[in-house]
Length: 213
Image 1 (cartoon, rainbow, N blue to C red):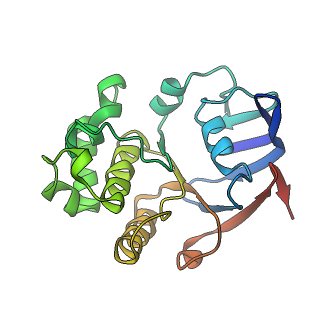
Image 2: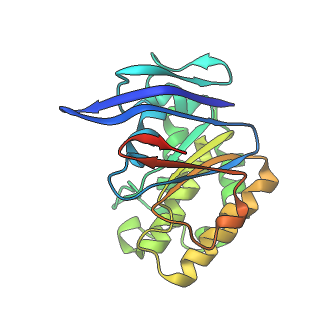
């Protein structure tokens, strides 16, 4: 489904990714493991088209993404959950979840919202609350819900458990594990192995922007 082949990315004068390679098939869950600053976020942003590649290629369902803008990649069925959640504080939970559908007209927003609420019914209970009133863990869940709206095929989850209370972290783990039933492909970045280890089909280690065998 997705192939990242020998990708390098410069952030300013720093080479943040160095010939990094990764692949994921339909329905697979991948763990991307590396310390803070190893290049995990840079890689996920590069897949989403936020970062320009210095070299290498990224293909999604055999389509070369190198010249595609972020919104075009989202329209192909890729959803991104950033580490900092990226919610708009003054919007409600439901409005934040539906944000991708405002720009991707091909999405059936009602069906996607129904799916999000089926997977995470707690989000429906807080749907009218403004994002600024949520706890950190609740914001993570809302950000995951938003990623699910556009991520009909592939989800990129950047440190979903970082800074989340244990109870909500366990709940997020259950939700992500349950996405296997939706035949979703998922790349999940984390700083270290945790209780979600058993859900992954394979692991990629990253250090200083490079693959680690």
